[in-house]
Length: 400
Image (cartoon, rainbow, N blue to C red):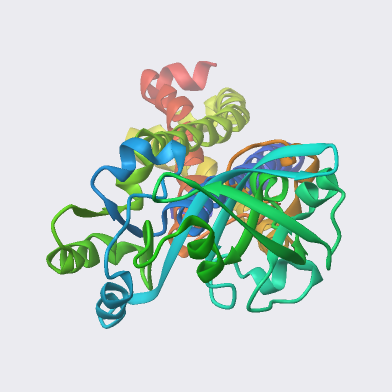
């Protein structure tokens, strides 16, 4: 009965109903789009840290963390290959990598720049280096430069460069390598400052005879990270630690969670502001139909009956505007997820592991949550003016 009365009343003034629903439509579309976009940006940020900097789990010596900014090459995990083999046997582990990072000055002719090198398995790594090459090919030996670093040094593939670095023994050592490739990682920090080389070549340069400074462990399911940490700990010898990406990110991870919550509050506020149109529409409808309200009260309609009729009117406006608007937002996000949004101009100087291509993210729970908001907020908004009905007796309403 309430639905029938509410729908009939809305059709009395179709233009006003349409305008009210339209405001909710655009607000819901904006909320759906904004939530997916924020999810994508924050997800890109945290995923970048996991993929390129922390992994889901990282094994180092206990003293490595305090010196990490200096990229120490003398903090060695002994028997790293044996440890890696044991970790790979654990269910839920997708891949394990040993890496060594080191700082260095690279120079050619009169140009010298500071750079960071990384030794790793060139064929199999989380960077997917093969797909990032814009020149050259993966070989067993050679150095691979970020395209902006190569441009600064005026280096091309096939040219030779001398690498000189401080070794794990405290002395200096140098090797010559050919530029085997140039990559575009689509991250400023890597494209401007990083180069890759085979782990064996890096070990030879840094005189790391056995072991590795860092072991990166990637999991099949991010939710299983702490469980895998507990399984890896007994495998570690004294002086080694395994830390999750949350422990490594520290306050940064909590800040990302807080930002996501704050943005959600802002999006709810946007939807609530749009619902002021519903409040205005309901107030006008109540005062226009005051005599009708008095008649219905005289005929036996209770205040609660009338309250729910007008609340249902507002709910229908929310349904007519909110659901299509939310769906539009999801469609836009879906298209943008497939194509990606290139923010290279904005992020080309951001020295953090953030890729230029942003892909908005919306899960099933996010979609259901926004749909519920698109309906619930207009319902709550329509309840406010509907309460005015309770103020008037039937005789008072009929005289108005």
